[in-house]
Amino acid sequence: MSQKTHTEFIRLFAPLQSQLLGYICSLMPNLNEADDLLQEVAVTGWDKFASFDPQKADFKAWLFGIARYKAMHAKRRFLRTQNLLNEAQSRRAEQYFSEMSLDYMETRQEALRDCMEELSDEQRRIILQRYKEKKTSYELAASFKRSAEQVRIQLFRLRKVLKSCITQKVNL
Image 1 (cartoon, rainbow, N blue to C red):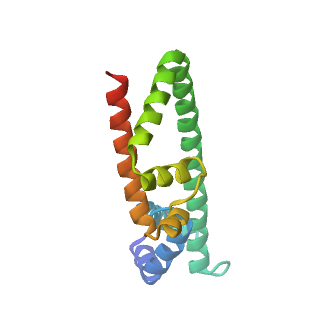
Image 2 (image 1 turned 60 degrees about the horizontal axis):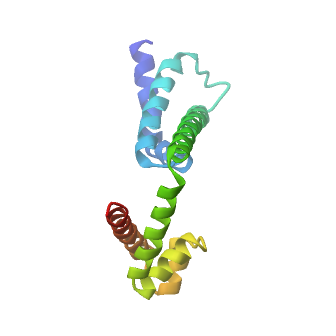
Image 3 (image 1 turned 180 degrees about the vertical axis):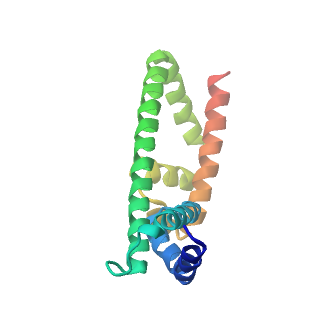
């Protein structure tokens, strides 16, 4: 690419950069991925700018098309990775639980019941509504008159308390 072409690309790209980032953010799950994708779009646009024909396409539309393609590709790559992870996790969980004895599982279940009894009524209700009734943190927040963030924090702490209690009872 000639110096003139480099200058022309930068002149056209610079004013669109923030608009392009906003568009990419609407397509991607988080800002870090959107920033990375913006860089990929810039590099691809830079590399292919010599073949860009302003008679056939608008530069902005051309650039946003590259962004859309890159975002779809990134999502497909992410889903493939997730599927591979899910398969590996499933096999690992299956192996773990198949090797675990029924007595051990029953002991842990009994320990969980005992530990749940040690919680206050409200703590027990929040755990049961979350995991038995499958309520979201927003639904629980409305029920318990708290923010969803407070509910998530309390659930985190309760899971930690239950894990510690179960471990202690099982290892007695």
